[in-house]
Image 1 (tube, rainbow, N blue to C red):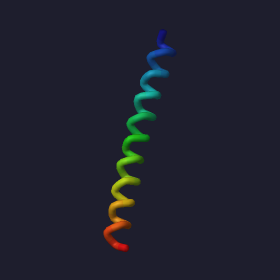
Image 2 (cartoon, rainbow, N blue to C red; image 1 turned 90 degrees about the vertical axis):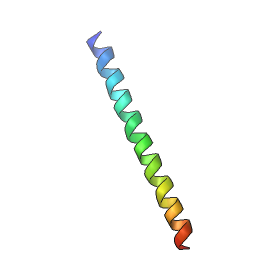
Image 3 (cartoon, rainbow, N blue to C red; image 1 turned 135 degrees about the horizontal axis):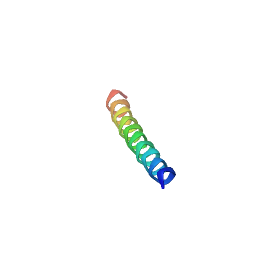
Image 4 (spheres, one colour; image 1 turned 45 degrees about the horizontal axis):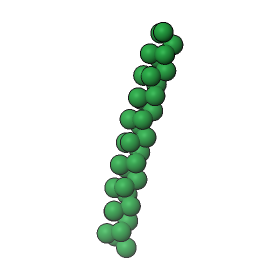
Length: 36
């Protein structure tokens, strides 16, 4: 049971990190478009 909770928390953290990365990539793409 504890293992499942730990796995779920790790999954949530990974998802949050991935969303942050996606947002950062989007911002950088928009910045590159504006500069070019």
